[in-house]
Length: 628
Image 1 (cartoon, helix red, strand yellow):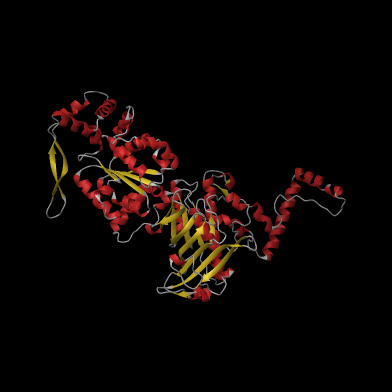
Image 2 (spheres, rainbow, N blue to C red):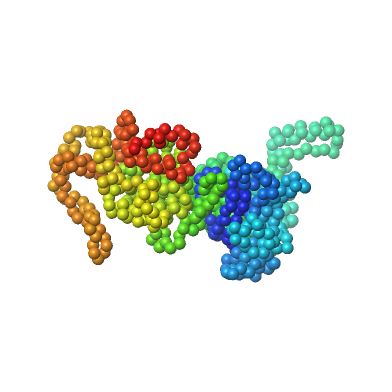
């Protein structure tokens, strides 16, 4: 459309004390409930809505702060050309508001909400800026353009806001809705109008003349003239509207599939009604574009869409985002849908979160990433585990066993399911797959903890990747967030070595149904060639680890242990959760393995905001009683 809202600055609005928002032609706001996504949309709507009531409730205040009447809301918008300069139409339209910047021209607009002592209420004022101040100078900046910001500016950058409570049935009864604005004037010529209304009158007369009931009712109602003491009164019943201008009041949308009778939209589910509202908005925008083109006026629609996935099943969510992406105009969309988040470009994601007094935001840092690294973030994280975008804390683990048992032990230790505390437990399916998840957690300021196997090469590689993402760290700093299993073992071997042999064997017996299974397993596989395993040696030419075949030896206690580990490793999906449940039948502190207690203790004592004050109070005794 020739321009773009490139940056939006918010000072002292609702839950925002100070944020600078970088916007694309399409931007996606993600984050948990009540972090400020809707407030950001409302702030942007306030900038381009001609008339809007404002009050002190919009002013950001900290906890226990007393509102100072001198405190102002400031909303700054940077309007930039899609190229280096505005095209002729936009340049002429903005006129003296255009500022020649170092890189490109721009227009800077400010909306101010401040207290008016003479009126005893808050006023809204709009001005243009003569330059774009630095972020630190926003509050003190007052170099305003002398020319007023007229209504025409707002009409050429209109806001179309569709909130999450949308319903086409409600829209059809509201003359100020997008439906109401479209159908209020259906643009019929006078000749056609007279002919149609003549036909409508004939239809009404024929219906009443053919119905004994309606004739009887009409005759009775005309007795009103006796009561009103007037011979000039006449009552008529209109089964169908006689005036074209009134047709919109009785309009109806009906849907039918190929094999059934049509049904009114009022009888459809909320998903269909929500989607119909979105399509009505799309139709209205297209119609306005035609009108503005006819009048040769510049037009840049600003679409603020709240939770477009509401009431829609997963496939429909994919379809509606595809439709949204084709809409003309600049789009800012808020969502809780990981399906929608997986479809956008990575640089379009704006993560909103709240820590402390105010809401804040961040972005994925894509600078310097290679195409394979970008693909891994999109394909291996967002498309498969996009729900982590809405987490406060992420616990990463390597394998299937940890993925199943960690939630069980987490609930035992904390007394809450992980999701109740905003915690996501994610198996990365292999030691080499941690890095994309680390990048997401780091860039979006999500607390990250890892439970890793203890092989030397895995420890070395994981520490290297962690430092690449989070910056150089000492081993003691790394250990606050990464828990390594001891003695180069995996999780199954750790449980066996930590005294849980009894539970492991009981689960094997439960699933296999006989006590002699391990002995038969040993007899069958002893002396066979095992899988290739990496050594600590590296090839001089390619720097890759050297893999060597191992011969299986199940003799003695060590051999028996190896047989048990291999047995459960071959069928982790069957064993893992059962082993955790059997361990929880124990009495005493070892109901949760000590290494996991250390991991959970770190989560509870680090900067994890998902652990609420109530939770900390309830778990204080457990933390104090943590084994040395």
